[in-house]
Length: 308
Image (cartoon, rainbow, N blue to C red; front, top):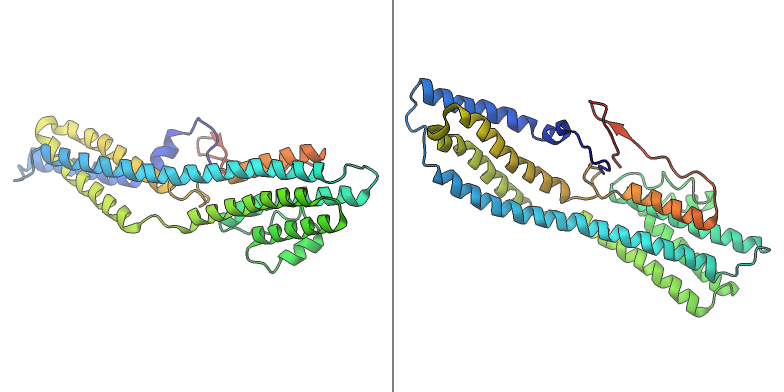
């Protein structure tokens, strides 16, 4: 996820640099054919690309709105994960007897809260089709990692371990029935958020809709020089490039936003959110262990921005 506001222009237009190069060459060819070779039929009424551009604008607006809805839903779900993680840690710390003379109770609290940190990181990696085992080492025991090593769905396995510990707490009498129900409801909310994220991940945006819009955009930019050549002459070259760039950029923006868990700069910042959850939960634990470092990358002009 891009976290800095000063995103370089080269990064933005780098996404459509091939299209811009081809479009510049194409509009220049149209101008040369019109100015020097008197190519017949090189001009068309400007109303034709105008009408087509209006239709495309409506389609792109609808697609951008739908893509943003998917991205925003993902962000809402991870906001709920933040709140529920804090609530779960608070429940673990306050529901279990706060006696500092009982090492077993302190160990249980730390184990469950650190497992929740691991769950956030592993869910982020699971959604991005990365190795969801890689963040477990800093949070869960060797025994639990061994139990999870054969599981394809690591976040689900961590939820199962949460449930096992919750049943153990009830059997030992460390929480009562009402507290057990409240903590189980929090675990259910985690499962619901995880399932909703997986629904967004697995639901592909309609391919035919994307292809039709892309075809119309290409048709528009191909006929646009013919509509402007009579009125603007050589000036139609930068005009065509500028007008077409807006359509290409909006289309690219929608493509990137529609899949918020694909390890792209426009993703929902799940790694950053997981790191913030870890900071909050370690604060509750009064744990001074350093939080995982923030990965960074740099653009060619040395402007730094985070990609998570």
